[in-house]
Image 1 (cartoon, rainbow over the protein chains, first blue to last red):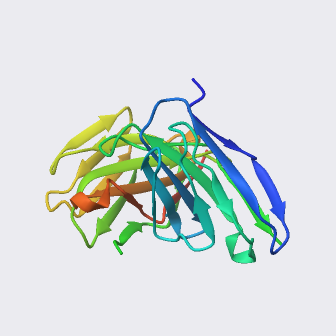
Image 2: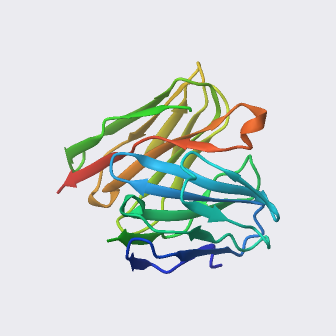
Length: 112
Length: 114
């Protein structure tokens, strides 16, 4: 099983550029989410989805958009990249609200 | 928002020593999870706790869900070099409107010297 797959693994952007981080899961999980990881800050929730067509904001949503058109995919869009968005981004999924999260291997994003 | 304080922030130990780390919260949680992250990878679930007072083991790892539902600890016995990594606690809110969102601690960086 592939589990949670994130692409790309690394990305460098210039300030103001836009891009989409891809996330796909093959476990038929209802719940998907995006976290960013910064040194000393742990993992902070950006956006989450409890099912296809349903998304909501997490702790740090500004500058990011998401959509959930299928159960499998949950892309994260950076509309106009800023240096403050330099981080490691993790996508995660879970079967339902009571089960543990499964993480992808992350996307390392640098904004110059 | 909810706050999770994880301590210590980092630990440097000798192989064979036992390790203990803990998390405390200002809010009640109905689930506590412990994850380990190896360099360049995503966090991997170690132990899940679902009931106050629950004590659960996974090999050399033991974790407990505090009676007050506001804290949890993780112990690693007889550490080995492959225990190196970042350990995260995560708590799930008991509030129905939270949709099961997890709050993560800041992480404990563990270094094991052979």
